[in-house]
Image 1 (cartoon, rainbow, N blue to C red):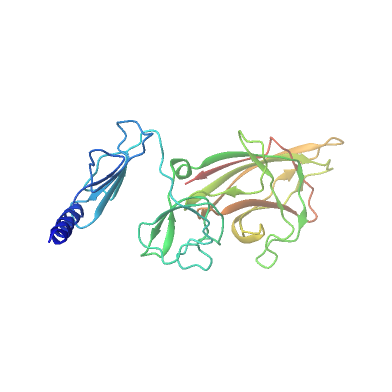
Image 2 (cartoon, rainbow, N blue to C red):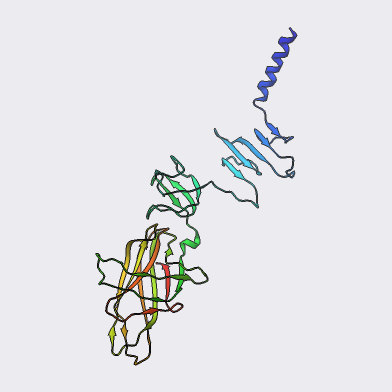
Length: 298
């Protein structure tokens, strides 16, 4: 008889404990589950797990429980780090993407570059949009107000080419090797940070050899989009300019010519400026520091 009473009491207390609060290193648990480290200061809440007021759970770290939040963080000198992944393409179903079957609102920090425009990805924070089946890049203020000034990094004597047409394309054109104002590392492309319309205001300045009479120079200047391997994907805009080479006697002269190119571009797209001189016209050597580009969003 005593054994039966003992087991019954054990059952009653066990059943009661299922509905009580559980504390680990917490004398007075503040949630269904309250975990603290012995090394935490007294005012640190630790980890609290409780009801969200509906049918789910609320988890808080170093904070009080918030019924309207599933997870709340209370530190005032720490940050939240989302999972870092290497996306290969912005499309959610793209082969090679590490996250299978993503759903609306998933947040990741992408560490890689990949894909082709307009489904390319660059490092940064992404949120998944299931309606578009696409990882959406989160814009920053700096990317939303992209205006940069570049100068030519090294001297460039223009290569010669045949008459420009769709068949010849930009074959034989040379890229402008640029350096941004305030930077020291040159590059032959400008990376676009957001989908928008852009303009390039170019000032081309350089030297020409001595000529005995007036001669028209025919120059082609193109803004091109690059593939991931650095080759030309497509021509975004192209202009023909015809500066005049004046007679300078026995001395070398100079020519300065302004022009503007405009185009639509996508986030992560790499834009290169390619230039060439039509064969048979005087050569033109562009000078570093004198040739410049102002690149801005329209």
